[in-house]
Image (cartoon, rainbow, N blue to C red):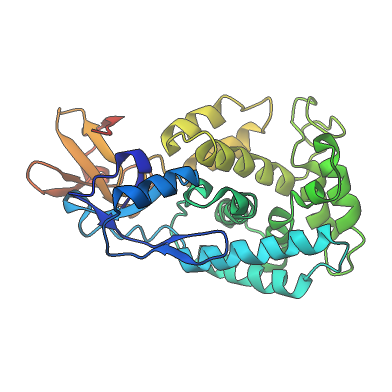
Length: 326
């Protein structure tokens, strides 16, 4: 299995590995089938940009670093319901969110790495909520290295799930951080730490962020964590850049938007190349990433010409030179 851009889909060589859902969580296309050109065009008209497919070169790749799609979709629906409830001036369904936090913490705890499902694999109406889920998953993954308590992990997760809740409370984009903070700090079950994640996630360590122009040392670590995962997820899903390019972009923000220590940790904990990525090696041979075991940046590869699978961690002279899409 691998994740491809919808433009790469070839009905003669590929079939769906995971179903495609609409905004009501109904299955538009089931796994295990090919996509007729008419339906492919409909998916494109819905601006669905990515598909999970099975083909000869990706046989046996499981992508265990990704949360299962039904779990991800369920989480997205819970966040969507919370945002819509708040927009209607009704009481936020905090119990549902707390249960979701526990599920996501458990999902992250059992994985060596987290690979995100791009939100652009869904219809536009769901992406804002799937974005919040992705930011939470990745924030929890990085937070595993911060030696924090389970209570703090849950506070972080609730804050990241709701970091953009202010967008349903104000029409002014510039005010959504403050609006979210003011709302969340009045919810008894939400800690002040979670509220500050929403308040500070657009601050920058050079003092040029929003809304208060705080500097490094003033910004809470969890808010910085939300900020860096927010930028990563948006660049991955909205801009369509591959993970290795997004990480390079993140590194350009070190010392200006993000603290250098956080950037260093982030780059250490996020894989450059996800399973299913086709690459060109420095020996001139093409390969596909098959799995990540141990070293996140030295995965296993399988040569496309022979099918031989090797660990880059055990072959230090072998280097990935570029990602190939042909």
